[in-house]
Image (cartoon, rainbow, N blue to C red):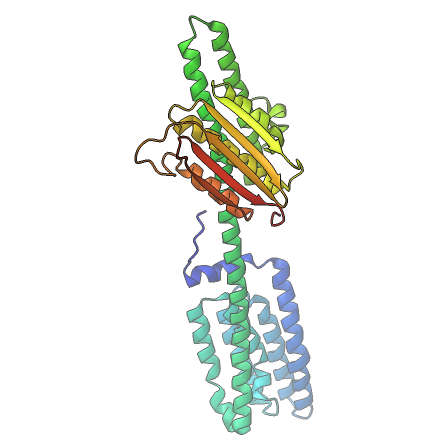
Amino acid sequence: MELSSRQPDDVLAREVQGKLSPRTVRALWWGSAGLVLGVLGTSVVVAGAERGWRLPVAAVLVLAQACALKWQASAPVPVLAVNALTGLAVWGLLPEVSLTGALLAAQITLCVLSATASRRMSVWALAAMCLPAVPAFGAGGPAGLAVYLLTVVLAWTVGQWRRAQQARIRAETRRAVVEERARIAREVHDVVAHTLSVMVIQAGAADDVFTERPDQARTALRAIETGARSALGELRLLLRAFGPAAGGEGEGGDGAGERSAPEPSLARLDELADTVRATGMTVRVHREGDDELPPAVDLAAYRIVQEALTNTLRHATGADAVSVHVTTEGECVKVTVVDNGRTRQGSSATAGAGRGLVGMKERARLVGGSLRAGPLPGGGFEVTARLPLDRAS
């Protein structure tokens, strides 16, 4: 289902209603019904103690209000109408009960309607609930009018506050989903782009020497198989984010080996360099400092190196060597990848990199770091990232 940052108001209202669990609905009913029976019921008993037949009739109407509250979450408009009419009837039978108290159930329903229904419907409901203000003024004067209007507006406002709170939670949830999808997309891109780049080069090399040097062709094919298995293992780990069954049994291939594939880490930097060396590229790796890094920084650094090597294979014209330096300097990890390719005239720092360079910058930003990438004056292309350790989580 596509998630949108802006949705019609009535769609949001249906979304809120659909998310109310049966337990929440029951708790809402018991709480509101208990409040009506405790407050309004007590007032009716006290006011109708010597009013003959009016007391049992008013008691039945109060009980009807409490029962109607059971459906206030699923059908707030009809319940509001029922509670408003029965509340006016109770007030007509027992004027000693204030109009504000007689319409307590209706005010509770107005609060629920304001929180769950569309904005337009809640405004109309508020206007309808303000109509009894005229008899409230006639019965209690300015004070009665002020108390009644205050309670009605307060009930509506509480519902609007709850509605805004739910909207904020939904917005945060949508944002988290979008960010998680973007993270998964970056992971899939890094795995697939790097592995396919190596496989294409290896396949071309195997085809060139297939007849004259079959042993070298077999070596290239084995490198393709190893890279494909490693990529499948990483993709299986990533696909688990979409559901618990994504990496389960019953899928083809070497399931056990792929499920046990180690997660990307700088500890696998030499393994990553070997896949690039298999294409004929000279790769020099140098590491200094602490090997124990926060998981987020470790993964970001590995993916930045992987993407930089992939861009070297795909876009560095004439490159035959690349150096990788990973240095821990105090509270920062510095990652530098430099190749010796030729920079074409008119090319920019982002030429050929496309999503890869954007993804590297985003990875650095997510852990609070920064990344620079561009051609060197004497030739070659350099990628430098600084990733702080204290801001990683």
